[in-house]
Amino acid sequence: MKISLTRRYRFSASHRLYNPGLSDSENQRLYGKCSNPYGHGHNYVAEITLSGPVDPATGMIANLGELDPFVEREVIEAFDHKYLNEDAPEFRRLVPTTENLVREIYRRVRHFPSARLEHVRIEETSKNSFEYAGEAGEDRES
Amino acid sequence: MIRITRKMEFSAAHFYHNPNFSAEENRRVFGKCNNPHGHGHNYVLEVTVAGEPDPETGMVLDLKELKEILQREVTNRMDHRHLNYEVPELAGKIPTCENIAATIWQLLAPKITKGRLDRVRLYESPDLFADCTAESTNDAGGQT
Image (cartoon, rainbow over all chains, first blue to last red; front, side, top):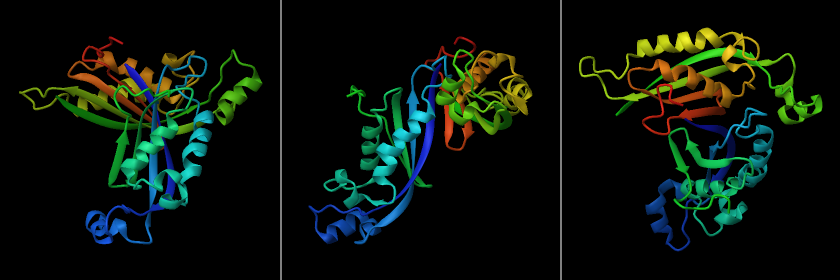
């Protein structure tokens, strides 16, 4: 039997799906209303799933007293109430789709020291979600 | 292979305290979860059983039967109880979401005789849950 712990976090941000290498009409064709010039926003939910031995002294895979401030610092402060295209440096040259966002959040959270990151799942709206578990053979500790 | 899931809820009290820690260390590690009179949650339990449908009944396991197993093994033990004091299976363990989920797995695995226990998901709140999952086809029926 394998055991994991999942914590859900919320943040709100705006974005615009726009590839500067394409014309405006191509962007409009590709991304539709998601490419409207002033951007739009979502209430994102980020699910962080960790695994590892349950510490007999605490009964925990990860102490939320450590995980919550880590995620707050690494993820929430970076993205909450921000315009992803401009306010998050990684999206100045990367289209802030939720596919790219889930990989970026995975990259930020995998350094959490006291448990193994299994996957990150993001709900962009209540109707769609995106999940990333790293690449096969990737060193999660790097 | 088909997976079927039954959801149920129970409400219980708990607190976190390790008798080997000093009062200060308990406070530092467990924070408000260490408050000595405890606090409570509405736990939501999702139990998933995997298997092939019986050709006679079309069912992996009758959900009514699964409900009765969950009531007998989980609700009757834990609902409206203090998990630190009233559940012998948790004695000596800190009743975290991880430990409660693992204990529920141990209680249920030998009782699921049609299909096999595939996953126990326990929500302590809508934003926090633990999953116990079978690691292989042999990892059920009390084999853990």
